[in-house]
Image (cartoon, rainbow, N blue to C red; front, side):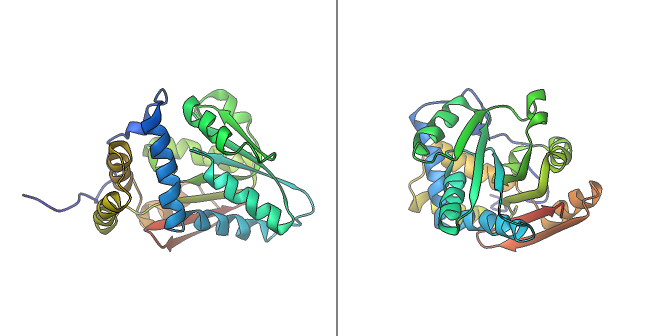
Length: 239
């Protein structure tokens, strides 16, 4: 029996969540579990630190519009709203997700936040090309796309952002895969969360792949840092 985790190349397997028509209690539970694990492992901090880094170079006496791609249950947006309130900043926060059930769930969880709104939209639709923002975020979303889709999306995000892009995504790692199997037991994850989580890791990235994307797309100013819980923080700055 071969116990080796195949991490040399990104898997082409899809996730259950990639079905945009999916709905129901299992999906709701999976969305909330993903958010809980991300908080537990400090994943939101990776994105928030990237936002702080890009905002540190500008005057903050203005409204900052931030778009979160593949927003899930809106947890990252609520984290940003709380940070803005504590810091005296004015954020306009927009979550975009292609699944209507997911968007409705995020809206319900975010009802008390007046500066958070959501759009149910496929980012490959022509209408998305008109979405402009100061910052565009991708937290655990980029790995859902094939290489050729990433090569289409990243230049679009770059053009449509004023300050830059913050990407927080998974390192493709055999150790991460095995540790997530343990997390599945600890958090008692349902089938969707367990299977999608393992596939996500196999769809993750190596640092060399992210560097290759950066060079291929001629981004002038970028940084890639490994962060705890087998993440890469990829900041692409236009400043």
